Length: 333
Image (tube, helix red, strand yellow):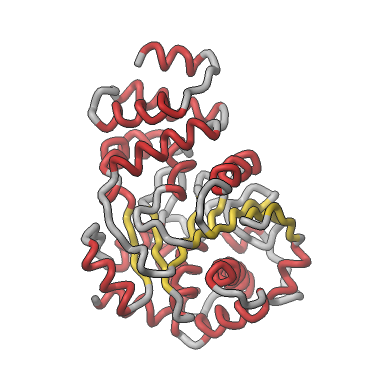
């Protein structure tokens, strides 16, 4: 371990196997808290390499609790977090809107570590009970169309370092890995990334998979589509560029989004109120359009419809109350 740390501090990179072994050693308690802090902060000084990310991912998935949800044609909408923007929970809202259209969603997330409120904070606050039992999750997908996979109940290593992550209060290598670790292995993924270099690394990785994906990066630093700037989007078809004007043509052409309109609350309770308000159709035009645009991109991974048709489906899901009804049914199961 001392040798690996020394090499990392000398700005040397790890091989795929070294990265994999590092997390396995961490899972076995062979790396102390101080060393864990050192490792996580190193990747704030530089981006991990493709080889390192692959090695870390392999270790995390091998150590995870296994479930099989591959019978469902589902999507996950998830971001790396760590963009420091303190937005309301856009991707989680988009998931319920997508489920409200009749599609399947396998959402993966966790408690906040580098932000104020993670998707798990929202759902736990609403009374959702986390589970890693395959039978229960399949029942949720069959009856409601959405299930939620709380990362620490599938990835025990996250529980062992959660205190370190919370104390640091900044993004870590686990923010980078998070979107790659969905144990349900959904066939479709809308992945938000907070910097362009990482978006390209994700893209190189996903080119060697059978996943249907769209990797999103807003050029002003958000890890989701916010309509505040142009975006880069990487899919199996290659790199695409969407200007703000092009994005607005999908939905409300006249909208002008101010970043302040996307801010979350000052605490978890306030963010839950914002979440319910938007899901109840009482969000501002900016809040609604941002959520609907992300849901539109996710729907376009699941079908061959145009962005415009998928936007209309998403809008109906929100405005008709179908999206909120999905949440109510999920909490009642």
